[in-house]
Image 1 (spheres, helix red, strand yellow):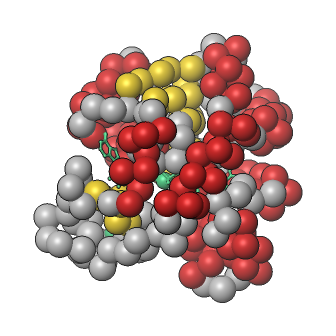
Image 2 (spheres, protein in one colour):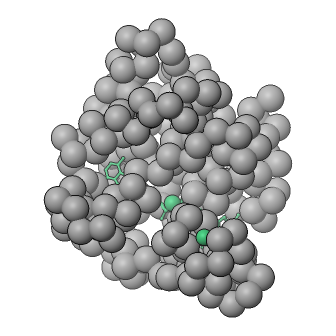
Image 3 (cartoon, rainbow, N blue to C red):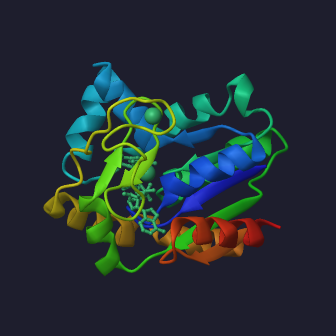
Length: 213
Ligand code: AP5
Ligand code: MG
Ligand code: ZN
């Protein structure tokens, strides 16, 4: 199963990608998480990516595409994966398609989680995430069992540096200009599955499972 998550920043891609990965027993591959891990470890890639991420801009395709293609060539990706945050531009989608076609493979589904912009800002300001395992929470909509502690791995939760309101607005405008065209792209590929992302997280997950049948 090779699945792509589409949707605005804060639509719930990470939240649902983790559930899908667990359901199908496949890895959750988030380019945002890979960049954040590189920033934490002080790598050259991390330093380059941080400059763009802090402004709410996309990291250039030249840095992103090679990194993602090498990640999905690792052995744990042989049985499939959930891509969260990639592709985000038409050139990224085309590079992915080319690489998969060369191996005789294809994407099975692109799940688009639809949430209006007004709701996104509320979600982002209350988000807390686990820097250790990537799990995502919300102080009121999806709180951890113990305050500021990850349910899955026990690590202390943190707030992302790009979740400031000004940066969220910039990320939303970048989404509309550069990433939204992918909805039409995957519609034309015949793999698009759209779900209403404004329901409760477990209801959104049920809708995704229904759409993937
Ligand atoms: P990335 O980390 O991918 O961020 P994003 O796309 O902006 O998405 P988010 O992680 O903010 O949101 P999400 O959809 O995962 O929502 P979540 O589940 O957390 O990318 C960060 C940056 O890295 C980019 O800006 C860019 O600079 C760079 N980058 C990454 N990939 C790139 C690429 N391919 N090319 C170029 N640059 C790239 O949910 C949000 C909140 O809402 C949480 O608090 C959650 O608990 C809550 N929530 C979730 N579902 C619900 C629900 N149903 N109801 C109520 N609350 C909910
Ligand atoms: Mg995410
Ligand atoms: Zn964790």
